[in-house]
Length: 218
Image 1 (cartoon, rainbow, N blue to C red):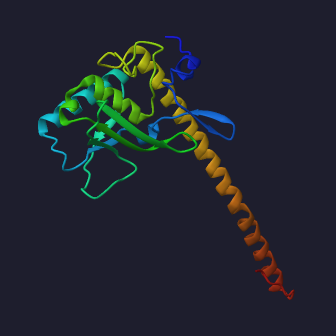
Image 2: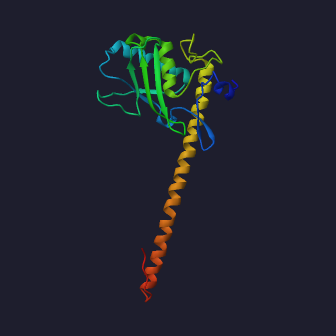
Image 3: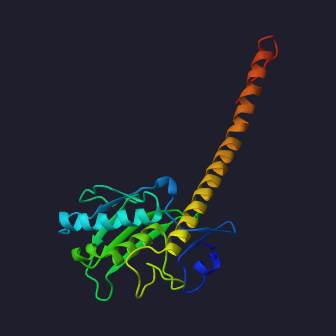
């Protein structure tokens, strides 16, 4: 399948969201190094074992479509609100069956995601759950192709185009993460180098001082 990033990022079709860093455009996505992403239900919402089983069955279908592990179960304590867990909650909504709030850093990595569904029965809807969990991974709406991310009528599972563009974004996200890591290592090395040179200089001064030349090092 031939990919067209412009098709997935243009107005009205922002399946691929963009964050800008130092003039570079980066796709927003959950960092592949942090997958599978932990997912937990908000406690005290009346989510039954049957609700949980239906929800996780849908997530496993998403993983089968994507060909990779995306999610793993996690436990959330009643008073905690961690940034590194996708939290699934219920909320009374007048017009929507689901809503997802995500936060990402300037480099484009998602570090906070909150998924809300209208009721526990919504956890049994493949179309709604897959749609909202794709939001949680960083992907937006599109009407450019038949997509689970179409805000109107949509299929109940990820389509081939959804999978292709999502895998493309995750691959680039992984490359960005590697670039950022090497940049951080380079900066750390630059900060340490003057100290090492200074230590060598100090050793030389003290060595000279041992044979009669007064030297100090601060």
